[in-house]
Length: 197
Image (cartoon, rainbow, N blue to C red; front, top):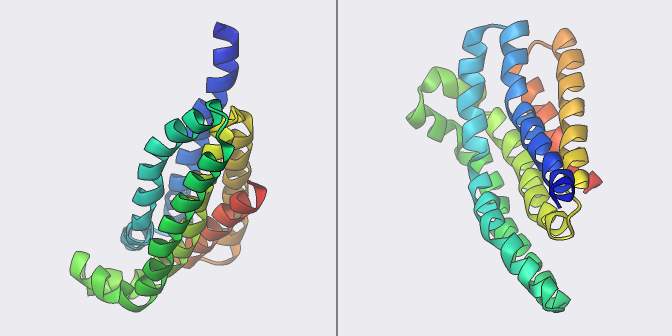
């Protein structure tokens, strides 16, 4: 029993580590290729753009248990309905958030930080918000893999996205010294993980 639990849980632990690398590695590349001040410009835009992620993370605390209970009781349609509602709720909030971050990103960054940060990072917010849309969908859809006990597939999804992010940042920052590169690689990493899942 212990061995089967380790086989099930170990990919989850590795997945959380890879997810941390995916979320934070771009700042290290910015600091390495540019300056620490560029990280100070990038981080507020990234945080504002990824603000909507709290919804799928909150859903992810409740949805697996409810879906597991429905599947165990041979009520697959209920599990599918819960998943569909979770996806619709997230999309109903995330899509307006993306358009709002395009329009209001600069004024909100000015209020949260200052006009210098807003002037440098206002393009980061909508790009990261669009990437966060796919990341949130990944979180919600990975609940299906969790219920089906396919944790290795969850790890592979995060690992693929993290490797792409690291390689893309390494290559693109060599040629283009801009914080927008980190936002674009973040978007594509989350999009690739979404396509995989």
